[in-house]
Length: 388
Image (cartoon, rainbow, N blue to C red; front, side, top):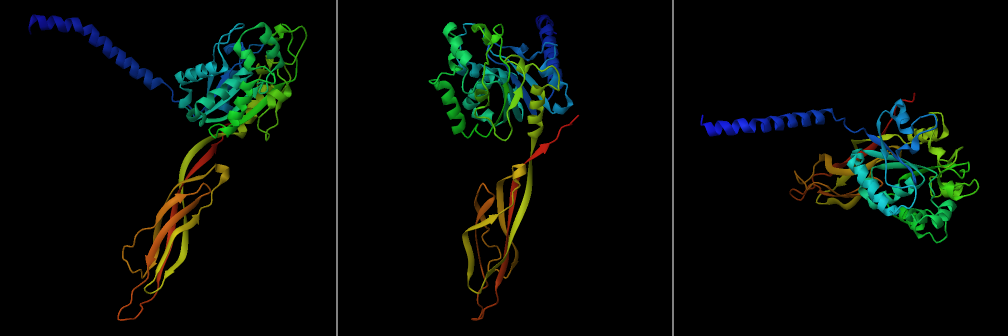
């Protein structure tokens, strides 16, 4: 071997070795990376909060309690965080909603089939703003459970805005001219991409002391978010949950029997993970006839199929064919065509066939046929997780 070539190969060997080692490591990492579970539970803290906002005085950490609870076995847990300094912040709710979405994307949250949120205070506002701005991801969201979210604003935020120039305080104010919160709720109710998302609410029933959170702007105890503000716009089928704690401690359950924890579990249990399945079902219209030298045709025959609303069934496709045919004039008649399917499971079919012709001026009988419409139906089947 030429000495120069040999020298180059020797010099490059460490690089080849390093590249091979890197590739092997990358493969091992990909192999050990767990696949996302069907659902992810995302914790979103409130104003001036952090990842530690969910930790109780006894050290119990709500996200960790969920991670180790077998009743949430099919869900991953994500603890979101966004910048919200204790004073003089500079970002608006819209800016923070974009930051929140970006971080959730980086953490692969939107790769799950279903996403649900536990949101505290401002966190609930940011989640709604974020979903309005990203309708494709909003389609994955089943429900939001908000704790002390000021849907109609907070008087404490209005007072605090006098002393602190953080734009978030204006966004959360209960002032009658708060255009941000009014527009947010109007947008939510007016957009099909989000207004089907369930919103469940919990409210604080104790005042916050002057030493805690917003309370530092006050001289007396005060309710940070009122019952009406915390529950405005939420689902009426599930009563709001009272949390016997102040605004900060309402999201710091001491154990799994605490009302905040139990409320989320009950909402989770009543809205189970849905597995998508495709099934087929058919409807046959019998007794179609065509006499001698006549035809039987209908450009819009409406053929229904029963759908189970409990499984959120939806007819996504359909095909039609003539079966049990007798004495049709054409051996291979034009096949029926499904022109459209209504949302209630009615297929519109265009079909035609001809009866037998005359031979020596004599009719040879009547044609008979049945029309079969086969539907492809999308089902959402609830998956029940362990209850203990």
